[in-house]
Length: 313
Image 1: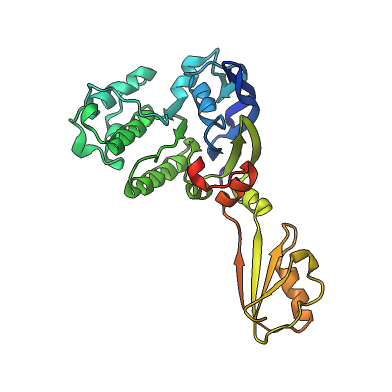
Image 2 (image 1 turned 90 degrees about the vertical axis):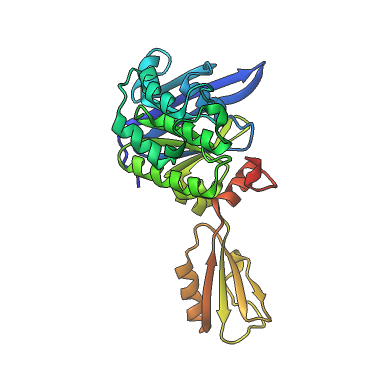
């Protein structure tokens, strides 16, 4: 669990339109220092627009963005130095080798090259066998690895990962998340967008969900899933039942498997213990218990009105 401390990022009443079409509509949220924060939404929800405004590559329409107490418009030199951004689009220096580009890049932020840190990034991201290749010769996955190393070369306090594992292999995905957890434990704050919702559910302390430019949910991950999920309780019975036990009307009870399984849909405020106590008081003999809860993906679909899965992100 992250520790609430100084705010790493404060976004207030943020608006942005393109050709008169609103892309971001009065968004407010705060990212606490030291947390992993997920910003999710379907394509066109406004996530990348917000990230580009934070990074300073898109002008604000109105509102404000503050990073570690510095306004990203007035104090842009400070904020750029504190941020590292892995953009969704592949952005590379075509004619440099990986080694040359990484040696140079820290200087863009006014930070002296740290060879020990650079070598650590090279090894952790599997770049060492490719150091002397120019960018034009790299595969898509290697370009993505380089972009991650480039974003982290100046040791940013806030690392922004916009779809960082898009198009990379499973091994790199797992290695990247292990590294992200490691640098987060060492104090780096993470802002993550991803279309792999199982990653967001596992990685993020809190999650914000956007849709059509609006912020429609902002909550601790486990609490969001718990509050909006459809919880089911399956009770396998010693003896089959002909009728549903009394007092379970608010759980939409159903008898399955020729009466040997009682299926209950639990409202958010109903706990399993009270249901079991009620059934035991009726001397119902239970052979086995199974519980099921919606995933973040199912909650996401419910909130955004999507009919598909994570592919629409």
